[in-house]
Image 1 (cartoon, rainbow, N blue to C red):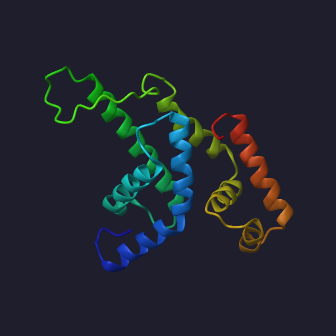
Image 2 (tube, rainbow, N blue to C red):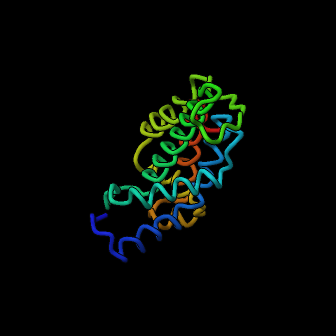
Length: 176
């Protein structure tokens, strides 16, 4: 994206958000499930992510994978949210926190919270770029037959690469 806040840039980013919305929704549910967060809904995480994407759209580099960038933004938003919740819970009584509703965040003390996304990104990066792309396309809701046509690959190749990629992520325990 350019540094200009032109109407075409905004339309382009909106178009990219619409195209990857379904994968963001699935990934938000997955993140919340993995981190055992119970006080945030996937829709709230998606909205927080979209706001951050719109405010940081100038950092997106054209020609790179928007879905991957958006997922990284979502991970960072959830991490920031968890840190803010942790700080709020540590405030002493009578502190300057305006809203001090005590939330039970069972996963906050779990050291794996910060590692979940790192592990996912490390395992995902080990997959071939083609497999990564195929998995992201399948998470975007594109049918395997359509993926095969788009990528000009046999349907069996598409199925096996997606299946093996997901199996590898599950074996590394970074995906349900």
